[in-house]
Amino acid sequence: PPVAPAPVRPPQPLPSRTLVAYGRDATSPSAEGEWTLEVLAAQVAATGLRNHRAGASLPRVEVTGYGAVSAGPDRAPGGSYGRRRATTARNRFTRLLAAELDRLQQGLPSGAPRLTADDFTVVVRAMARVPADWAGTGALAGVTRAELGRQAVIALHQQPDAVAVQKLDTLRRRDRALRTGPLDVDAVARRVLHLDPADTVGADTRTELFGLVGRASAAGRATGFAALAAYHLSELGVTAPDR
Image 1: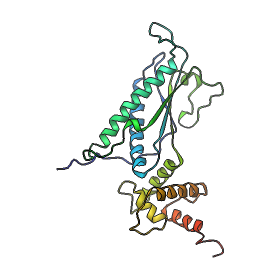
Image 2: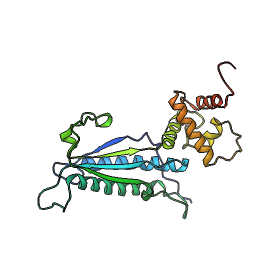
Image 3: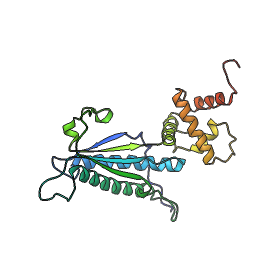
Image 4: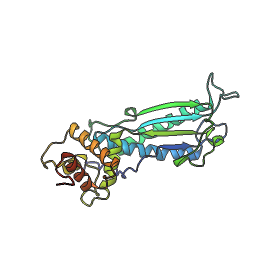
C-alpha cells in the first residue's frame, strides 16, 4: 500500500531570535543548545514546507556567534570563538533541518519535487564582543552581555508574504470548515477574494491575497476570513459608510 505522509503538526509562529547555549570556552553547543537546535530545525522545516506549498518565501536564517579570538592549542588561524560557534551552530542546524525535511516528505511519490535544506538561506556572522548598549528583549529578555558573549543567536527573518501565510494559518485554525486539514491557500483565496469555486488560483492571485492580508492586518481588520472578505469588498468600493 502507499506510504502515508508523515504527520505534520501545524507550525507555530517562528521565534524572531533564539539563544543557542554553549559552555564556557566551548565552540560546540551544550546539551541544552543541541536540544534548542533540534526544536528550531523542526519548526523551520514545517514552516518552510507550508510556505513552499503556499507559494510564499522561505524563512531566512542568520546565525551570529559571539566571542573574541580564541586562545590555546586548538586555536584556528585567524579564528574566533564567535566565528567557530556560529559555524558549528549553522552546520548542526542545517543537518537537522535536512533530516526533518526528509522525514516530513517521506510519503511523497518518487520523483516528486522536494524542498531541501539547500533551498534555505543560512548565513553566518561573528561578533567579538556584544554591543555595549545590549538589552535583551523578547525571547532573550534577561540575557546579560556576559552571558551572550559566549553563546550564539539564531535570527529568523520572514518576508511580508510569509508573514501573511502565517496569519492565514492562524485564522484557519479558528475556522470550523478549514481547521482539520493543512492550510489551503487556493481555497482561502477563492473565499476571501470572492472568486468562483471553479476559478484557477495562480501566483498573481496568491500575491493579491497576501497583499490584502498585510493591509488588513495593518488596519486591524484581519480577525477572520469573513473580516478579510469584508475588507476586500471595502477596497473594491462595494461597501462604504455612506452606502
